[in-house]
Length: 427
Image (cartoon, rainbow, N blue to C red; front, top):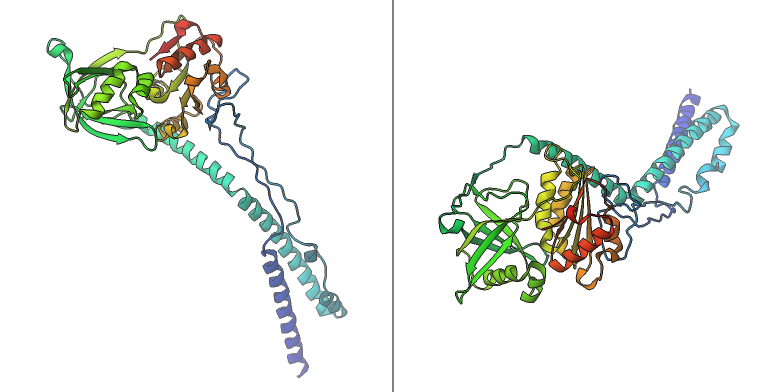
Protein backbone atom coordinates (compact mmCIF):
# COMPACT_ATOMS: atom_id res chain seq x y z
CA UNK A 1 0.00 0.00 0.00
CA UNK A 2 2.94 2.30 0.65
CA UNK A 3 4.64 1.48 -2.71
CA UNK A 4 1.74 2.91 -4.72
CA UNK A 5 1.97 6.45 -3.35
CA UNK A 6 5.78 6.41 -3.72
CA UNK A 7 5.52 5.34 -7.34
CA UNK A 8 2.94 7.97 -8.03
CA UNK A 9 5.12 10.61 -6.36
CA UNK A 10 8.13 9.47 -8.41
CA UNK A 11 6.11 9.63 -11.62
CA UNK A 12 4.88 13.09 -10.66
CA UNK A 13 8.45 14.25 -10.05
CA UNK A 14 9.58 12.81 -13.40
CA UNK A 15 6.73 14.50 -15.23
CA UNK A 16 7.59 17.78 -13.47
CA UNK A 17 11.24 17.35 -14.49
CA UNK A 18 10.19 16.70 -18.06
CA UNK A 19 8.08 19.86 -18.11
CA UNK A 20 10.91 21.95 -16.70
CA UNK A 21 13.45 20.67 -19.25
CA UNK A 22 11.08 21.19 -22.18
CA UNK A 23 10.11 24.67 -21.06
CA UNK A 24 13.76 25.54 -20.43
CA UNK A 25 14.66 24.61 -24.02
CA UNK A 26 11.78 26.60 -25.43
CA UNK A 27 12.60 29.68 -23.34
CA UNK A 28 16.32 29.51 -24.12
CA UNK A 29 15.63 29.22 -27.81
CA UNK A 30 13.96 32.65 -27.85
CA UNK A 31 16.77 34.48 -26.07
CA UNK A 32 18.61 37.19 -28.07
CA UNK A 33 20.32 35.57 -31.06
CA UNK A 34 24.01 35.75 -31.86
CA UNK A 35 23.45 35.89 -35.62
CA UNK A 36 24.35 39.05 -37.47
CA UNK A 37 22.93 40.29 -40.72
CA UNK A 38 23.95 42.73 -43.40
CA UNK A 39 21.38 44.62 -45.43
CA UNK A 40 22.61 46.01 -48.72
CA UNK A 41 21.38 49.26 -50.32
CA UNK A 42 17.87 49.20 -51.69
CA UNK A 43 16.41 51.24 -54.53
CA UNK A 44 12.84 51.31 -55.75
CA UNK A 45 12.43 51.27 -59.50
CA UNK A 46 9.23 51.60 -61.44
CA UNK A 47 10.40 50.63 -64.90
CA UNK A 48 7.24 50.73 -67.00
CA UNK A 49 6.88 48.81 -70.27
CA UNK A 50 9.88 46.95 -71.77
CA UNK A 51 11.67 48.75 -74.57
CA UNK A 52 14.16 47.81 -77.25
CA UNK A 53 17.14 49.59 -75.82
CA UNK A 54 20.11 48.79 -73.67
CA UNK A 55 19.29 51.14 -70.81
CA UNK A 56 16.38 50.67 -68.47
CA UNK A 57 13.95 53.43 -67.46
CA UNK A 58 13.52 53.84 -63.73
CA UNK A 59 11.62 56.14 -61.40
CA UNK A 60 14.41 57.88 -59.57
CA UNK A 61 15.37 61.07 -57.84
CA UNK A 62 19.08 61.34 -58.32
CA UNK A 63 21.90 63.74 -58.87
CA UNK A 64 23.38 64.00 -62.35
CA UNK A 65 25.92 61.38 -63.27
CA UNK A 66 24.92 58.96 -60.51
CA UNK A 67 23.60 55.65 -61.75
CA UNK A 68 20.80 54.20 -59.63
CA UNK A 69 21.08 50.38 -59.32
CA UNK A 70 18.12 48.05 -59.38
CA UNK A 71 16.60 46.81 -56.17
CA UNK A 72 19.03 44.50 -54.31
CA UNK A 73 18.25 43.14 -50.86
CA UNK A 74 20.37 40.35 -49.38
CA UNK A 75 20.70 38.97 -45.87
CA UNK A 76 23.87 37.16 -44.75
CA UNK A 77 23.89 35.07 -41.54
CA UNK A 78 27.40 35.02 -40.07
CA UNK A 79 26.91 32.75 -37.01
CA UNK A 80 24.65 29.83 -36.05
CA UNK A 81 21.25 30.80 -34.70
CA UNK A 82 21.35 28.19 -31.92
CA UNK A 83 24.49 27.12 -30.00
CA UNK A 84 25.64 23.47 -29.96
CA UNK A 85 24.59 23.03 -26.32
CA UNK A 86 21.01 22.48 -27.48
CA UNK A 87 22.08 19.21 -29.16
CA UNK A 88 24.09 17.58 -26.28
CA UNK A 89 22.68 15.31 -23.59
CA UNK A 90 23.14 16.29 -19.96
CA UNK A 91 24.18 14.00 -17.05
CA UNK A 92 20.68 13.88 -15.66
CA UNK A 93 19.40 12.42 -18.90
CA UNK A 94 22.05 9.65 -18.85
CA UNK A 95 21.27 8.72 -15.26
CA UNK A 96 17.64 8.02 -16.04
CA UNK A 97 18.62 5.07 -18.29
CA UNK A 98 19.00 2.74 -15.26
CA UNK A 99 15.33 1.95 -14.93
CA UNK A 100 12.66 1.07 -17.49
CA UNK A 101 10.34 3.86 -16.62
CA UNK A 102 13.16 6.40 -16.75
CA UNK A 103 14.16 5.05 -20.19
CA UNK A 104 10.62 5.74 -21.31
CA UNK A 105 10.81 9.21 -19.84
CA UNK A 106 14.18 9.77 -21.57
CA UNK A 107 12.75 8.70 -24.93
CA UNK A 108 9.80 10.99 -24.51
CA UNK A 109 12.09 13.80 -23.34
CA UNK A 110 14.41 13.35 -26.35
CA UNK A 111 11.52 13.32 -28.82
CA UNK A 112 9.90 16.39 -27.30
CA UNK A 113 13.21 18.24 -26.98
CA UNK A 114 14.12 17.44 -30.59
CA UNK A 115 10.77 18.70 -31.83
CA UNK A 116 11.13 21.76 -29.62
CA UNK A 117 14.62 22.56 -30.89
CA UNK A 118 13.74 21.98 -34.54
CA UNK A 119 10.61 24.10 -34.19
CA UNK A 120 12.59 26.77 -32.36
CA UNK A 121 15.31 26.82 -35.03
CA UNK A 122 12.71 27.22 -37.77
CA UNK A 123 10.78 29.92 -35.92
CA UNK A 124 13.96 31.76 -34.94
CA UNK A 125 15.32 31.63 -38.48
CA UNK A 126 12.03 32.87 -39.91
CA UNK A 127 11.81 35.61 -37.28
CA UNK A 128 15.38 36.71 -37.99
CA UNK A 129 14.78 36.92 -41.72
CA UNK A 130 11.56 38.84 -41.18
CA UNK A 131 13.19 41.26 -38.74
CA UNK A 132 16.30 41.80 -40.84
CA UNK A 133 14.34 42.35 -44.03
CA UNK A 134 11.30 44.04 -42.49
CA UNK A 135 11.93 47.27 -44.37
CA UNK A 136 12.19 45.40 -47.66
CA UNK A 137 8.97 43.52 -46.94
CA UNK A 138 7.25 46.76 -45.98
CA UNK A 139 8.36 48.37 -49.24
CA UNK A 140 7.22 45.36 -51.26
CA UNK A 141 3.85 45.23 -49.51
CA UNK A 142 3.45 48.99 -49.89
CA UNK A 143 4.22 48.88 -53.60
CA UNK A 144 1.91 45.91 -54.11
CA UNK A 145 -0.88 47.71 -52.26
CA UNK A 146 -0.43 50.83 -54.39
CA UNK A 147 -0.43 48.78 -57.59
CA UNK A 148 -3.65 47.03 -56.58
CA UNK A 149 -5.19 50.34 -55.51
CA UNK A 150 -4.17 51.86 -58.84
CA UNK A 151 -5.85 49.05 -60.76
CA UNK A 152 -9.01 49.46 -58.70
CA UNK A 153 -8.94 53.23 -59.24
CA UNK A 154 -8.52 52.71 -62.98
CA UNK A 155 -11.59 50.47 -63.13
CA UNK A 156 -13.55 52.80 -60.86
CA UNK A 157 -12.86 55.79 -63.10
CA UNK A 158 -14.52 54.01 -66.01
CA UNK A 159 -17.82 53.89 -64.16
CA UNK A 160 -17.46 57.02 -62.06
CA UNK A 161 -19.92 59.76 -62.85
CA UNK A 162 -18.10 62.94 -63.76
CA UNK A 163 -19.57 66.42 -63.39
CA UNK A 164 -18.55 67.81 -66.77
CA UNK A 165 -19.98 71.24 -66.06
CA UNK A 166 -21.05 73.82 -68.62
CA UNK A 167 -18.50 75.26 -71.08
CA UNK A 168 -17.96 78.92 -70.28
CA UNK A 169 -19.15 81.05 -73.23
CA UNK A 170 -16.68 83.36 -75.00
CA UNK A 171 -18.17 85.71 -77.57
CA UNK A 172 -15.64 86.69 -80.24
CA UNK A 173 -17.83 89.63 -81.26
CA UNK A 174 -18.05 91.05 -77.77
CA UNK A 175 -14.85 92.21 -76.07
CA UNK A 176 -12.77 90.35 -78.66
CA UNK A 177 -13.67 87.05 -77.00
CA UNK A 178 -12.44 87.98 -73.53
CA UNK A 179 -14.23 86.83 -70.39
CA UNK A 180 -13.75 87.52 -66.69
CA UNK A 181 -12.43 85.47 -63.77
CA UNK A 182 -11.62 86.41 -60.16
CA UNK A 183 -8.44 85.72 -58.20
CA UNK A 184 -9.44 83.39 -55.37
CA UNK A 185 -6.21 82.43 -53.60
CA UNK A 186 -2.41 82.24 -53.70
CA UNK A 187 -0.79 79.19 -52.12
CA UNK A 188 2.68 77.70 -52.09
CA UNK A 189 2.84 74.20 -53.55
CA UNK A 190 4.28 72.06 -50.77
CA UNK A 191 7.97 72.79 -50.20
CA UNK A 192 8.64 73.46 -53.86
CA UNK A 193 9.59 76.71 -55.58
CA UNK A 194 6.13 76.94 -57.16
CA UNK A 195 2.98 78.87 -56.27
CA UNK A 196 -0.51 77.86 -57.30
CA UNK A 197 -2.96 80.65 -58.10
CA UNK A 198 -6.64 79.68 -58.11
CA UNK A 199 -9.23 81.67 -60.06
CA UNK A 200 -13.03 81.53 -59.82
CA UNK A 201 -15.15 81.51 -62.98
CA UNK A 202 -18.33 83.64 -63.19
CA UNK A 203 -20.61 80.64 -62.56
CA UNK A 204 -19.99 77.61 -60.30
CA UNK A 205 -20.96 75.23 -63.14
CA UNK A 206 -18.60 76.75 -65.70
CA UNK A 207 -15.56 74.92 -67.06
CA UNK A 208 -13.02 76.26 -69.53
CA UNK A 209 -13.58 74.85 -73.06
CA UNK A 210 -9.98 73.84 -73.74
CA UNK A 211 -8.55 71.24 -76.09
CA UNK A 212 -5.64 69.00 -75.13
CA UNK A 213 -2.47 71.10 -75.20
CA UNK A 214 -4.34 74.42 -75.27
CA UNK A 215 -3.29 77.35 -73.10
CA UNK A 216 -5.30 80.03 -71.29
CA UNK A 217 -4.64 83.64 -72.31
CA UNK A 218 -4.80 85.98 -69.29
CA UNK A 219 -4.58 89.75 -69.05
CA UNK A 220 -4.53 92.30 -66.23
CA UNK A 221 -3.44 95.86 -65.47
CA UNK A 222 -0.63 96.75 -63.10
CA UNK A 223 -0.72 99.75 -60.77
CA UNK A 224 0.79 101.94 -63.49
CA UNK A 225 -2.04 101.10 -65.87
CA UNK A 226 0.13 99.00 -68.15
CA UNK A 227 -1.29 95.84 -69.70
CA UNK A 228 0.31 92.53 -68.72
CA UNK A 229 -0.64 89.45 -70.71
CA UNK A 230 0.54 85.84 -70.80
CA UNK A 231 -0.43 82.35 -71.97
CA UNK A 232 -0.44 79.51 -69.44
CA UNK A 233 -1.51 75.89 -69.03
CA UNK A 234 -4.05 75.07 -66.32
CA UNK A 235 -2.83 72.91 -63.44
CA UNK A 236 -5.30 70.13 -62.65
CA UNK A 237 -5.04 67.89 -59.60
CA UNK A 238 -7.17 65.23 -61.29
CA UNK A 239 -8.24 64.14 -64.75
CA UNK A 240 -11.71 65.58 -64.05
CA UNK A 241 -11.31 68.91 -62.23
CA UNK A 242 -14.29 70.39 -60.45
CA UNK A 243 -16.28 73.07 -62.29
CA UNK A 244 -16.28 76.68 -61.19
CA UNK A 245 -12.54 77.38 -60.96
CA UNK A 246 -9.09 76.66 -62.38
CA UNK A 247 -5.50 76.84 -61.17
CA UNK A 248 -2.23 78.08 -62.69
CA UNK A 249 1.22 77.03 -61.45
CA UNK A 250 3.86 79.78 -61.35
CA UNK A 251 7.53 79.79 -60.28
CA UNK A 252 8.54 81.78 -57.20
CA UNK A 253 11.89 83.06 -58.48
CA UNK A 254 12.99 86.59 -59.21
CA UNK A 255 11.72 88.46 -62.27
CA UNK A 256 14.95 87.65 -64.13
CA UNK A 257 14.70 83.95 -63.24
CA UNK A 258 11.03 83.86 -64.23
CA UNK A 259 11.86 85.48 -67.55
CA UNK A 260 14.21 82.57 -68.29
CA UNK A 261 11.69 79.93 -67.20
CA UNK A 262 8.35 81.21 -68.57
CA UNK A 263 9.34 83.96 -71.01
CA UNK A 264 9.23 87.75 -70.79
CA UNK A 265 5.46 88.18 -71.28
CA UNK A 266 4.68 85.47 -68.74
CA UNK A 267 7.12 86.96 -66.25
CA UNK A 268 5.60 90.44 -66.67
CA UNK A 269 2.10 89.08 -66.06
CA UNK A 270 3.31 87.15 -63.01
CA UNK A 271 4.97 90.27 -61.57
CA UNK A 272 1.70 92.21 -61.87
CA UNK A 273 -0.22 89.27 -60.44
CA UNK A 274 2.09 89.09 -57.42
CA UNK A 275 2.46 92.78 -56.71
CA UNK A 276 -0.67 94.52 -57.94
CA UNK A 277 -3.56 92.03 -58.11
CA UNK A 278 -5.31 91.28 -54.84
CA UNK A 279 -7.60 88.40 -53.92
CA UNK A 280 -11.06 89.26 -55.26
CA UNK A 281 -9.76 91.32 -58.20
CA UNK A 282 -10.97 90.52 -61.71
CA UNK A 283 -8.73 89.30 -64.51
CA UNK A 284 -9.54 88.89 -68.21
CA UNK A 285 -9.16 85.48 -69.84
CA UNK A 286 -10.01 83.53 -72.97
CA UNK A 287 -8.96 80.23 -74.60
CA UNK A 288 -5.40 80.61 -75.86
CA UNK A 289 -3.21 78.98 -78.51
CA UNK A 290 -3.13 75.21 -79.06
CA UNK A 291 0.47 74.04 -78.70
CA UNK A 292 0.16 70.27 -79.18
CA UNK A 293 0.50 69.13 -82.79
CA UNK A 294 2.11 66.28 -84.73
CA UNK A 295 3.52 66.89 -88.21
CA UNK A 296 5.26 63.57 -88.70
CA UNK A 297 4.50 60.90 -91.27
CA UNK A 298 4.50 57.88 -88.96
CA UNK A 299 0.88 57.25 -88.07
CA UNK A 300 -0.68 56.13 -85.84
CA UNK A 301 1.32 57.48 -82.91
CA UNK A 302 2.00 54.55 -80.58
CA UNK A 303 4.68 55.95 -78.29
CA UNK A 304 5.00 59.27 -76.43
CA UNK A 305 8.24 60.65 -74.99
CA UNK A 306 7.95 63.73 -72.77
CA UNK A 307 10.85 65.90 -71.59
CA UNK A 308 9.70 68.52 -69.09
CA UNK A 309 11.53 71.06 -66.97
CA UNK A 310 10.07 73.00 -64.04
CA UNK A 311 6.44 74.01 -64.57
CA UNK A 312 6.58 72.29 -67.95
CA UNK A 313 5.29 69.21 -66.15
CA UNK A 314 1.81 70.81 -65.96
CA UNK A 315 0.71 70.21 -69.59
CA UNK A 316 2.59 66.90 -69.65
CA UNK A 317 0.58 65.63 -66.69
CA UNK A 318 -2.70 66.44 -68.47
CA UNK A 319 -1.57 64.72 -71.65
CA UNK A 320 -0.38 61.62 -69.79
CA UNK A 321 -3.81 61.30 -68.20
CA UNK A 322 -5.44 61.70 -71.60
CA UNK A 323 -3.46 59.12 -73.60
CA UNK A 324 -2.99 56.34 -71.01
CA UNK A 325 -6.55 54.89 -70.85
CA UNK A 326 -6.84 51.94 -73.22
CA UNK A 327 -9.73 53.26 -75.30
CA UNK A 328 -8.62 56.89 -75.47
CA UNK A 329 -5.77 56.74 -78.01
CA UNK A 330 -3.45 54.54 -80.06
CA UNK A 331 -0.59 55.12 -77.60
CA UNK A 332 0.80 51.94 -76.01
CA UNK A 333 3.84 53.32 -74.16
CA UNK A 334 4.68 56.63 -72.46
CA UNK A 335 8.02 57.85 -71.08
CA UNK A 336 8.25 61.00 -68.94
CA UNK A 337 11.51 62.72 -67.99
CA UNK A 338 11.02 65.58 -65.53
CA UNK A 339 14.02 67.77 -64.70
CA UNK A 340 14.31 70.21 -61.77
CA UNK A 341 17.23 72.05 -60.23
CA UNK A 342 16.22 71.02 -56.69
CA UNK A 343 14.70 67.80 -55.36
CA UNK A 344 12.06 69.71 -53.39
CA UNK A 345 10.55 70.95 -56.66
CA UNK A 346 9.20 67.43 -57.22
CA UNK A 347 7.00 67.87 -54.14
CA UNK A 348 3.26 67.17 -54.58
CA UNK A 349 3.18 67.03 -58.37
CA UNK A 350 5.43 63.95 -58.41
CA UNK A 351 2.73 62.21 -56.36
CA UNK A 352 0.23 62.88 -59.14
CA UNK A 353 2.57 61.23 -61.64
CA UNK A 354 3.08 58.34 -59.25
CA UNK A 355 -0.68 57.79 -59.07
CA UNK A 356 -0.82 57.51 -62.84
CA UNK A 357 2.05 55.04 -62.78
CA UNK A 358 0.29 52.73 -60.35
CA UNK A 359 -2.79 52.81 -62.56
CA UNK A 360 -0.84 52.13 -65.76
CA UNK A 361 2.47 50.62 -64.66
CA UNK A 362 2.76 48.53 -67.84
CA UNK A 363 2.51 51.56 -70.11
CA UNK A 364 4.11 54.43 -68.17
CA UNK A 365 7.73 55.04 -67.16
CA UNK A 366 8.76 58.16 -65.22
CA UNK A 367 12.21 59.56 -64.41
CA UNK A 368 12.66 62.52 -62.06
CA UNK A 369 16.15 63.99 -62.49
CA UNK A 370 17.83 66.71 -60.44
CA UNK A 371 19.95 68.80 -62.79
CA UNK A 372 20.66 72.37 -63.89
CA UNK A 373 20.10 72.32 -67.64
CA UNK A 374 21.30 75.93 -67.97
CA UNK A 375 24.85 74.86 -67.10
CA UNK A 376 25.02 72.02 -69.64
CA UNK A 377 26.08 72.30 -73.24
CA UNK A 378 23.97 69.28 -74.15
CA UNK A 379 21.02 67.64 -72.43
CA UNK A 380 22.49 64.25 -73.26
CA UNK A 381 25.49 64.94 -71.01
CA UNK A 382 23.32 63.84 -68.10
CA UNK A 383 23.50 60.03 -68.02
CA UNK A 384 20.11 59.75 -66.32
CA UNK A 385 18.37 61.72 -69.05
CA UNK A 386 20.22 59.78 -71.73
CA UNK A 387 19.16 56.45 -70.22
CA UNK A 388 15.54 57.49 -69.72
CA UNK A 389 14.88 58.57 -73.31
CA UNK A 390 14.49 55.69 -75.79
CA UNK A 391 15.91 55.80 -79.29
CA UNK A 392 13.49 56.75 -82.04
CA UNK A 393 11.20 54.16 -83.55
CA UNK A 394 8.50 54.74 -86.14
CA UNK A 395 5.28 55.85 -84.43
CA UNK A 396 7.04 57.70 -81.60
CA UNK A 397 6.30 61.36 -80.88
CA UNK A 398 8.40 63.56 -78.58
CA UNK A 399 7.02 66.52 -76.62
CA UNK A 400 9.19 69.16 -74.93
CA UNK A 401 7.85 71.50 -72.23
CA UNK A 402 9.98 74.02 -70.38
CA UNK A 403 12.20 77.10 -70.78
CA UNK A 404 13.23 78.02 -74.31
CA UNK A 405 16.93 77.40 -73.63
CA UNK A 406 16.18 73.89 -72.38
CA UNK A 407 13.89 73.27 -75.35
CA UNK A 408 16.68 74.04 -77.83
CA UNK A 409 19.02 71.61 -76.09
CA UNK A 410 16.29 68.97 -75.93
CA UNK A 411 15.63 69.27 -79.68
CA UNK A 412 19.32 68.79 -80.47
CA UNK A 413 19.51 65.84 -78.07
CA UNK A 414 16.48 64.12 -79.61
CA UNK A 415 17.71 64.67 -83.16
CA UNK A 416 21.00 63.03 -82.17
CA UNK A 417 18.95 60.07 -80.92
CA UNK A 418 17.35 59.69 -84.34
CA UNK A 419 14.13 61.71 -83.88
CA UNK A 420 13.06 63.53 -87.08
CA UNK A 421 12.30 67.20 -86.44
CA UNK A 422 8.67 66.80 -87.54
CA UNK A 423 8.08 64.23 -84.78
CA UNK A 424 9.14 66.72 -82.06
CA UNK A 425 6.61 69.14 -80.57
CA UNK A 426 7.56 72.07 -78.33
CA UNK A 427 4.81 73.31 -76.00
